[in-house]
Image (cartoon, rainbow, N blue to C red):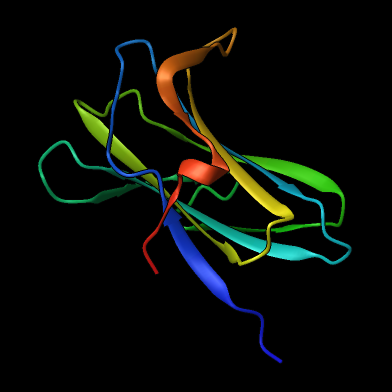
Length: 125
């Protein structure tokens, strides 16, 4: 039986001036390895412009997460003028939890209004 996958979006977020990074924290509480793909888009000009996501350094970053482990993926959004979006493709499983937060530069402080928790992500596919 094939595992069902879905794509979730933060929706478009307005970038506060101090936000430098969009970070996706993902925890795998399942007993099996999971694959997650993250994309970040700059929507400032009205169309989606993909940004590079680390640790891959590509515009679409896919990582494997071992059971009972967490990972984080991030994009530099410091040059985004107005708005950005984060999309996460993952298996549909309540034990695979994704949250997105906007952070400042060092010391990496989370920004108010720049956090989207798993329950607030919008399923778009």
